[in-house]
Length: 251
Image (cartoon, rainbow, N blue to C red; front, side, top):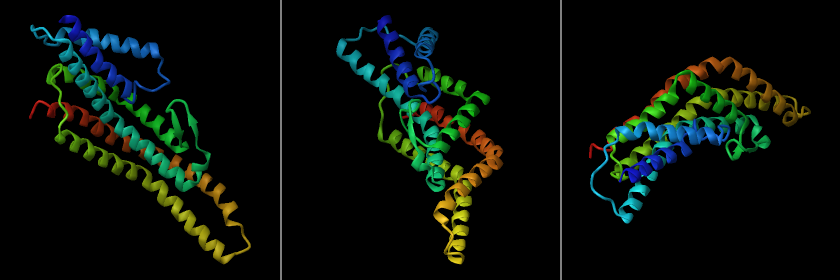
């Protein structure tokens, strides 16, 4: 029974680490992920209540699926804030014209935008500056106290909460990208007026370098505000992970 419970703990932690935004990055060595998972498993195991009854093979399989589902759900919730940040960068890239320069990023295993990568690494720096990675580990460890092994069951209430959190993440993306988008729209409006006033001027060729230079200049001006915005929003959004875990037993 002890070995079975150890396996269940290992599955919950592994499924969380695989999706969690900070630890799942491909830039993190695989050996470091394995060591982190093993250390957390060994550290949590003495504090988990182990039932004395024997568990059949079928019950063990079902409990393993539940642990994997819980770990992936917690990882997905913590990943939403970084998805919102990348979404904001993609909105800016589309408006500035960088969407044409998207390339495959092996770190994300997807087509990544320029401002999306820039905002992502700024958010990652904020995570370590504010020790938010400790908040993720705290939520993971707390889940073993509030949610006993094999007792997790995802219900409609939880799904509605995740959908609501996704809506708030989209709102965060809009708020983060709004200043840059508005500034670029003003540039487009100005270029449109110039093209009507001077038809001989090739606004299409002139607009791309102007928007590029202005977007970088505006980003440098707004960088402190972006850091402050992320510093306020990210602890709140990652705090939803703790709220989600605490809401599970209160059914």
